Image (spheres, rainbow, N blue to C red):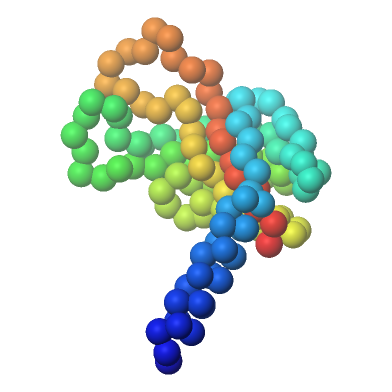
Length: 125
C-alpha cells in the first residue's frame, strides 16, 4: 500500500471520529431528576447510586474502583458502571454512555460537596 493512500485513509478516519465526537451530546442529571435529551427525545432519570468503590481523592489504592448507578431511560431501568461493564447501552438509534458520577469520593470530609449527579453522553448509532 502506498504511503499516500495510507495517509489518505488515516486522514479520512480522523474526520469520521471527529464527526462522531461532535454528534455526541452531554447531559448532567441530578439524583432523582429527569431530563429529556434532544434530538433523541430520550427521557433519562438518575435513579440511584448502587455502589461506589472508587479510590477516594487523597488515598493510595491498588484499584481505581467502580461506581454503579441505575438510570431509567424511556421508562426502563439500566445499570451503568464507571470502570466495569456495561458503561453504555444502545437504546433505539442512540448509545447512552456514563461519563461521570459526582461527587467523587474523598478521604477528607467535603463541607461544600456537590449535589449527587451523573453525566451521560448520547451518541447516534
